[in-house]
Length: 454
Image (cartoon, rainbow, N blue to C red; front, side, top):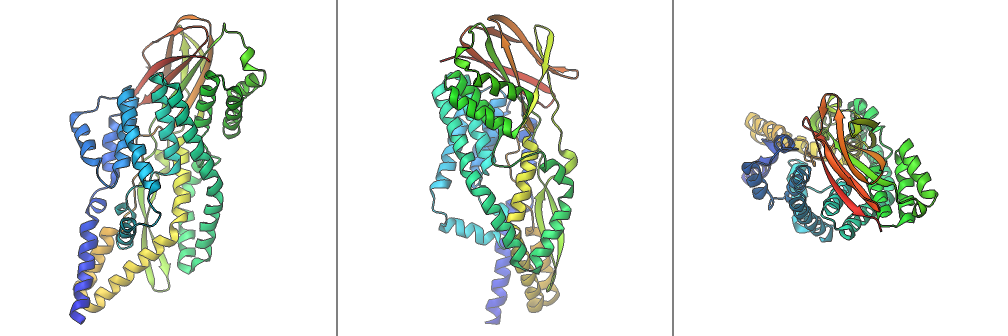
């Protein structure tokens, strides 16, 4: 019997090590850096092959989102659209599965002796919203407004769903952590101290379940489609989240019956996606417990890697008309979302770390120094933070709105000494002109799509 117990302990160590290889000896950041370097650049054959190999992995949905984003920034809208479709099929399968399935239970059980990276990636709601917004952009450039409207409705539906569930769930988890036990309380206190440097960044965002970028883009689409009441509602929601003077003007304009405006003025809406969202890093903390010191690893952000938004100059026919303004700080949103998520999973992390510590002690009792060493190796190897995230998302989104007379105009965007190529605008009456720009990796690029107003 004693032999069987010893064999089981070594088997547990071996299994956790083998099944955690991908999560242990490399992090998603290594791949994320490769993906981020291809924003505004041609996708290499090696990168395309890498994506193809990863589609059928447990994190296939994440790789599809990364590739779809890269293709869109590189103005390959049809290809981007197809990859987003595949990603949404993955998401639908995740949602349609029973909340408790044998495979899911198996992954969760394995994570309790290793780390959360072994569990298939679940796309957080705020990333789902951004994915559907991006797909709407693809449809706008491909002149399919009906499909674009569907994607906007889906994005707004997700925001409504998580708004209803979010606060109650977060408070419930926080209360659970507070009441759980001394270990959890100590961990919560240490975590609060660890996140102090990120609090000013997280404080820039009202909440993690509503995105002003989504509301503003939807409002402009509804206005183009002649759905003025819906447009007014979404302009007001965008203003509530981001009280900017330009959005206030949009609200006033809709209030004064947009339908009666003169057709001599053509709206040109410039959407700018700037920078790259910060990457997660690992932080480890020692937590005192009655049984000894346990070690937990959690994902966080380095405050210095957060880059504050910088407005772009909007030039028309070589004359600066205005500066763009921030509509959504996605980097700050990611920071706030991560902080809430870490607090919500704190109890599970403490339980896992405590179980590992107990296993380490048992190995020491059973096998002496060799067992203690094996336990140390297991804990060091498997206690890793889950650093997976959609790494190619923009750091922030900005907008500018122009009202132009019909004719040929040349638009250019600049930031310091960096400028985009001049973009030709063929402005026609009864149209809305959408300009999508990307300011990333020391390049500013832009694409134009003109849509007839209905």
